[in-house]
Image 1 (cartoon, rainbow, N blue to C red):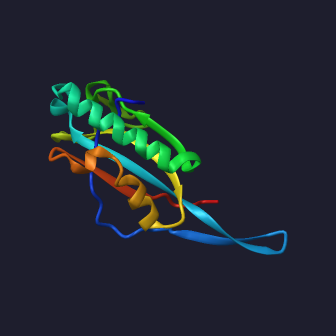
Image 2 (cartoon, rainbow, N blue to C red; image 1 turned 120 degrees about the vertical axis):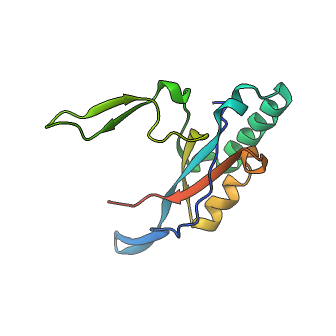
Amino acid sequence: MDNLQRRCPSTRPPIVVHHETTRAGRTVCDMANYLILIYGDEQRWDTMSAERMQEIDEGHRVFRERAGAAIRASGQLESSSSAATLRAGDGEKPLIVDGPFLETKEVVGGFYVIEAADRDEAIALASALAEVRHDHSAVQVQPLVDHG
């Protein structure tokens, strides 16, 4: 995952920050899970200099070091040209279209799912990613709904 690179900001308030449960007669504050989506301009990533790639890789190394065991999942996505989008089709069968859901300049390039005490902690961790400092990319932090 060392070449992870993508981004996008969110202005929506968190849906779930944390919840309390009772275990063995004790009230425990559970940490919430947050999705960090990395968006960016795919053409710019494809032509990025080795120095810029190294900066991005270093940002991910720092992020992984800071987040540690709080990282629940992560991944770098293949090119958006390898995506398939499924939409409502005729009857029971979906219509399958090659490519991403939207035709935009920015695409999702990677993600992390982390556990954090609150939105501020999740944002502080995501701030280590180099993509937050590039003019063609963004990092979106959004809480996951706990159906638990």
